[in-house]
Length: 135
Ligand SMILES: [Zn+2]
Image (tube, protein in one colour):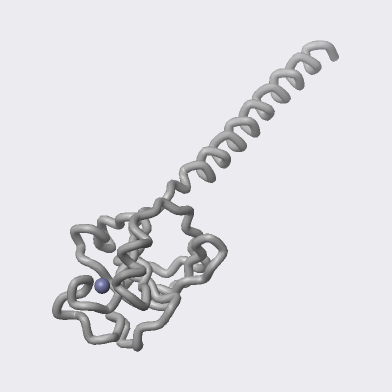
C-alpha cells in the first residue's frame, strides 16, 4: 500500500498547485480592472461643436447622469463613486476609441461649462452594471 500513499501525496500537491494558480489568476483578473479616465463636458458649442443642440447622441434630452462612451451601447448603466450613470452620448474616436479599439474613457455630462471645467480630469474605478457592447 505504500506506493499508493506516495501517489496520493503527488496528486494532492498537483491539485494544490492548480487551485493556487487559479486563485492567483482570478486575483490578477480583479486587479486588472484599471482606472478609467473620466472627463466632464456640457452641451455648449465649446464642448460639442456642431452637436451642441441640447440632446445626447442617443436622441434624449440632456440630463444629469448622462455620459459619453464609445464602445458601450446606449442605455448601459455604469457606477462611478456610487452613482449610476447611463451611456447616452458619444465622443470623438480619437479620445474615446471605437468598438474595435475601446478606450477606457468616459465623459460625464454637466449642466454648465464652468462646472465641467472645474471638474477637470479624474481617474476612477468604473463598474459596468450590465455589459452591453455597442452593435
Ligand atoms: Zn461646455
